Image 1 (spheres, rainbow, N blue to C red):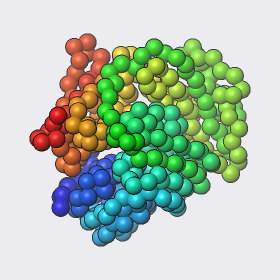
Image 2: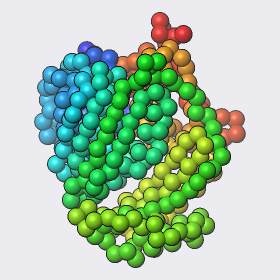
Image 3: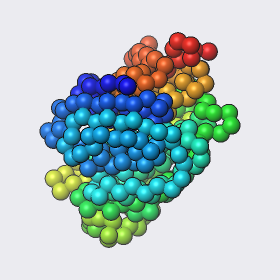
Length: 353
């Protein structure tokens, strides 16, 4: 059994999600202690319990300690199975984090999986649906595993009520195939859109106006998509940069305490930070890409690299958690130009090619 002190490093819920995913992938039981110990509300919250329940459902796991506020969890997985699954957070907690908990294991399942996920789709401190569908999923497909994601209904805090359908296929006959991603390639397109269900249209116009004035982007009415009243009230501003080799999506969530101009300026900062570097991946995609790439390196025995604007504490903690389960090693180093980092993932021990 692998023992993990979940308070180490960044100390948040990502340690739990990565540990659950790789416990299912490797079949190794895991004991997590001090879960979210550094957070204002330590322990397992509803969203984390949904991740545990989803992992239990797809692997037939035995679970001890899955209680609200619990800081110790024992997870003993069985074989991962494809099939139909329904997961409801029951609050506005992020369904995208639930999806990313089970997706790595389902890459190696015995059959495709079809998931219906209900809860929040656009949350602070979590990847948005648009990010996962447009930035993360295409990279997973390049590894050799098909996936289709559909946003049926947006879900915002505090109402939730969003719904996402996902059809996830295991890797093809050649297995997961790692690849280098060191350049983003030429810019093919860029666009922004603003979600404002139950919110005045003028909020979207002001947020998009900040991007127009500070980035020089032009917009038409399609930048404000039609959303139903029962999907809100809620607000998310999204900016997408589509390059030849990678797509990046930057998001900021509107709240009562934040002006439309503050939301717009947040997205501008994210875009400018990315464009100020020549790296392939932004900080969030660099973090989330580590797990599926680590799986591919492990299964193939071949190393792979990617460049990113920075390696956050969240990412380095994720690297360390992955290394606890898989015979791979992450090495991050700055590139000579000082504008980017390179992360190399290498197989170790008998797994090295």
